[in-house]
Image (cartoon, rainbow, N blue to C red; front, side, top):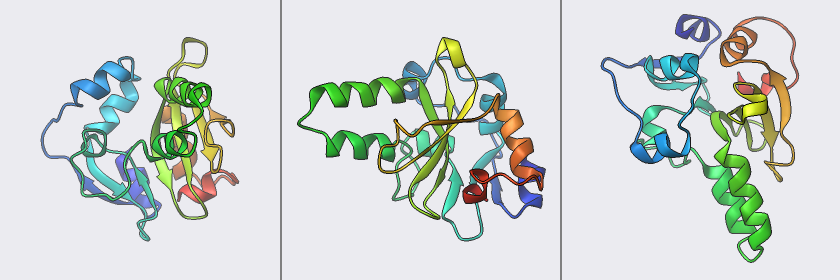
Length: 164
């Protein structure tokens, strides 16, 4: 998995020892797919050469990275923009409670790929883009491993172009 990302130009800092996700994150996202949990244990950082595309890491999720961009930045932006609208804020929280952002891009606007953790779409990957991150969510593929295969192949995909 990691080697394939290196082969397409991602810069990887590999993890040398196991690290746990914070209890807050584990409580919010208690059912992360096993392939994604295994992937998180393999790296500390993965970015493209321009540093405008990156995978969220355990350090990001735990609030321990030096990134100026928080792992849940898009959720926080939406909540801030709609702070006076309780119903909209509840909908934003509901969306992000079942979608964990895994790959972020500021390459051509704010964009993300996330894993859907809802029972009906468990493990599927979705794409979203500003300004309405939650409403724009579009199906990409059936699993995290399939996403890695798509990213590392030369297959033409308009969505994934912004994540390389």
